[in-house]
Length: 103
Image (cartoon, rainbow, N blue to C red; front, side):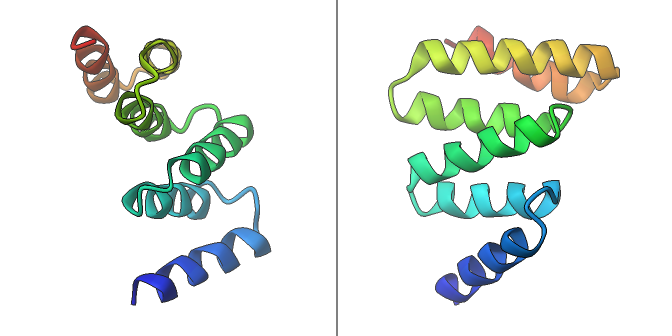
C-alpha cells in the first residue's frame, strides 16, 4: 500500500509538476519514509512554484531539525513567518513562530 501511494503521488506530480497539493503530498510521503533529501527537494520545488504554500515552510523546517540543520530550519521558519504575516494567516504564523522559538 505504501509503495502504491508513493507511485500515485509520483504520477500525479509527473502529470502536473506545478500542482501544489500533489507536490506537497509527495514531499510528505518522502518525509514519512525518512527520505529527507527527496522530501526537501520537493518542498523546495513547491515553494519555488507557490511561495505562499504556508504548510511547506513548517514541514521543511521540521526536516531540517531532524537532520541537524538548525540554521536552515531557522531560515525557512523566518521566511514562512514573513509569508504568513503578509497573507494574514495568523494560525500558520503562530505555529512557525513557536517552532522558531524552540530552536
